[in-house]
Amino acid sequence: MPGIYTHNFIFRKALEKVKKKSHESIIYKSIEILFSCPENIKTGLLGAIGPNIFDYMHLISRDSFYGNEISFYLHDFAYESFIFTLIDIIKEKGDFQTEWISAQRSYLFGYISHIIADSFLHPYVFYSSGFPDEDDTNKKFYRKSNLRFQYNIDNYYLYRDKSFTREDLEVSSMIPSPYNKKEALSWISARNLLLSGLQRENPELFKKYFKKFSNEKLDGTFTKTTPLDKVLKNIPLCYRLKRSENHRVIKIIDWFEKRQSIIYSDFFIRYPSPKRVDEDALNIHQGRWQYPAFQRGFRYDSVIHLTNHAIESIVEAWGILEKYFMSCDEKITLSFVNPYTGEKEGHYRDMEIKEPIKIKV
Image (cartoon, rainbow, N blue to C red; front, side, top):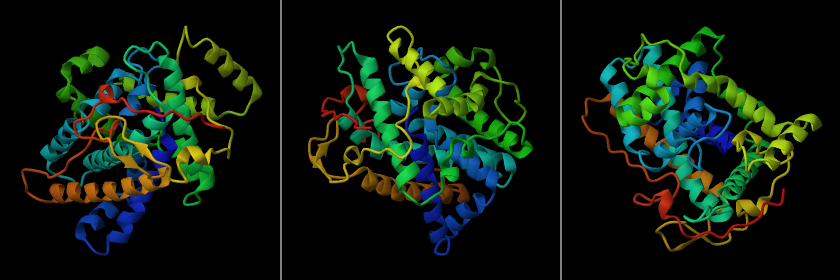
């Protein structure tokens, strides 16, 4: 569940670029119109949480080291095919102007922004924070290092970059309210898209977590509560805990963290104190680093450079997708790389190169 504020920032920056390009192209004008609705912006920001949304279903981590196994699967194996599955579900509906489909399109744009942003930032983060070797028994140490590294990036965009207000980037701006009629409808629409996509992509994994709904048709008539609905409360709770400066809360979190060899939860890995940022860990001085999997050449990008590259790629992908939705074409020319390794054929298990640095905040 890393980097939620950074994903918020990147999505909003991509929207800014869309507005600038809307005068040049009817494609980008169409995207601008879609996100002129506040509910669609919030649904897009929800999508920007990406597969990590499944990490928030349970307080205690029970599955793979890097989050819930659905999240891991969608990041590492089905990162591209799952997006095409979601595209097919939306395209099959035909009428893109209804509130239901507009919400699903908005969610998909956000989801794509997450996958692309990860593919730019994760290789640097893994190289610099480290990752466990295959026979490494100290996996929780690397998980915590990885999260803290990404929280340092979050703090940079929360407190150092002045593009948006703190309120814009708060978690509440990304989570639909079940008490707001329009936002509640957007949530059900986005949730049903996500779950029906998983149901098609990996029926076994869907059945493992959503067995009760295995035979349900997850369309506009499906409004039952699912385990995924827990995230609407769990995500805000998680970040209140992680960022709290209340001494009593800090003591409770510290108590849990000391016992994480017995019971582990991402919920109890705290953020650095407000406004504290280790800029060296952002590679501001452009030191050399490498992709952790197959690529062996050196790179010198800072986190800020990587973020800007991601934004450009996201806007380009959005344009291709919107053109596809507006046309009668049967194929779409979109391509993605692995969000962990930044490489088409490289998976998490292929990562070998790392040079961990210790965060100084």
